[in-house]
Length: 253
Image (cartoon, rainbow, N blue to C red; front, side, top):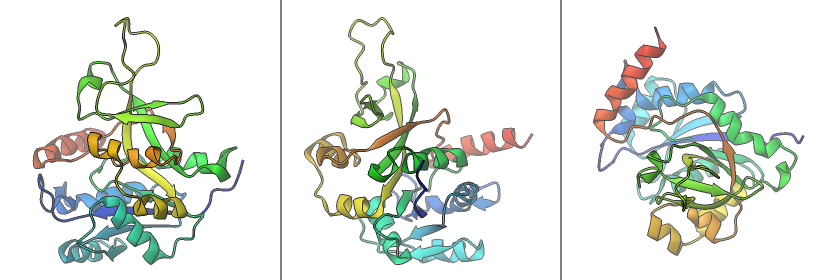
């Protein structure tokens, strides 16, 4: 086993969202959503530092009030990846450091998922691992939804392809063979890989599927996929907050 390189967790928190403006500030049982994400992430002991990366003074002020380390980043970033890269540069992350993009709209994030995401960097092939993400088993019925992004893997656990279509396709409809895997949008990349990824133009497959991670595969950058039994409970719209609150209240019983 190899030692885990220094790891930095960055939570991108943009104010403007077409479906849910001000989403990071959404109140969840008395705490802004970004605070709950930060608390969950901090329960994973593998990080040197975990910071919020925002583009809005209101979020920065709220972070200060809740004692959450935060950085102001540009309002012109086209993606969360670009914001994460700026924050990682501000933190002085070295080329071999691992930078984790922690989704700011996952207030029920399981800390163990972050440990699973980082494990390959300390595994037998640790020095050659450039990027990792997560996936979990998915039912064939759920796999039909284009909102559920699926991934197929090679024999070494690296991503072959991501799609909104149901992959792999069960031609005979017998339910045997490889079942579908749901992609979970947590990413860990070495700083040098993150720099390269952000500098590359959007790929044709990426533009077709509207899936940023395909840029890595289109450019021959291997993406190791760790499987997890944990699920996702993301917040995309205001009505999703009610679902999160319900789960939290159940957990507190």
